[in-house]
Image (cartoon, rainbow, N blue to C red; front, side, top):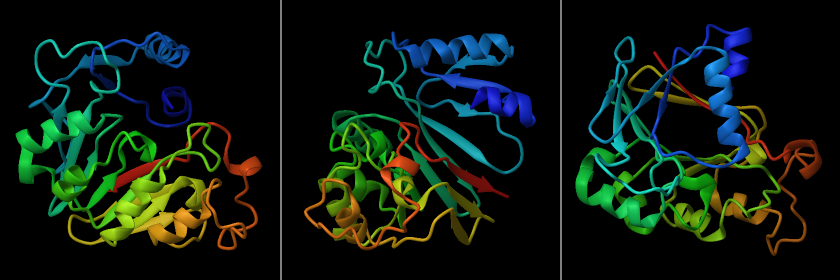
Length: 237
């Protein structure tokens, strides 16, 4: 992503990081790319606010200040992006234990119009308590159609369905763009598909539904599931 914006766009500017390293090749490539393009690299923690231009505010809710241990997922940078009356919550890969701490510490500040489901829709995130605290109108799940990790999980989709949360999944909707003027919200997807979480549940590759009748023909495991998630982008202004 950094290389793409540095070579075809206006550049990244700054990379905000938790400061907790990973020994994965992906993390190594990320650091190499930051260095190659001389991207400013800043470590953030809870209560920081990112210096964004315009009327968009970005509140950092995680990782906690001080020594937060070495778990990469639990130290994910959790961001609440606010523009006008609109809020978008991106919780990274934090698990249910961290979610409970966020509920205890941030309370109603977690309430958001759009929730980017934690950890790609994994069962380790999006607990009942957290989803209730966020109380979103829309949820976005970013994972490949035939994810090797089984994302999104059935229980998370069932949780969204029970609460009638309008749900988008890159596995069937492709690239997802959320646009807002601070009041109204518009969602654009590359592919047309139901936003009912029950329909999405029926369409997941391990679903008991053998027909998979709702999926559009071009969205097959071969064409969508490359191991790279479809793009999800909030656009505010």
